Length: 142
Image (cartoon, rainbow, N blue to C red):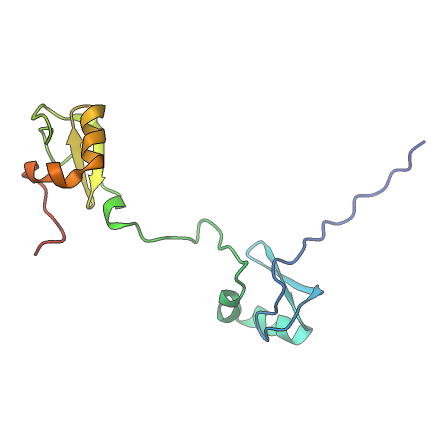
């Protein structure tokens, strides 16, 4: 008969090899869990300093990955979230009425197109077609 063993308490491995306070090699038994990630330290003194002001030291832990809800990368100029409604009524390529489901965000503004083919051509070369969108206000020009 097989012997039943209690599962060991999950001991997470530290994510770092160097102490974020002193820069020395860490002792894997001296750890602190910060935002779900185990950070190791060279000594208890450094662990205490980190716990008191983690924001002063967490930047030195290159392996630390900020939780997704805290990451707020700046959108690139052409990827700013817009309200979804096209600024134009006519397709800049063919002059037909736009299909509100065929849009592209260009310099923070939603440009409407009439079909997937026009959407693809606009995405490939927006400079060629944007001048035909009278409603477009170029944020790069003053």
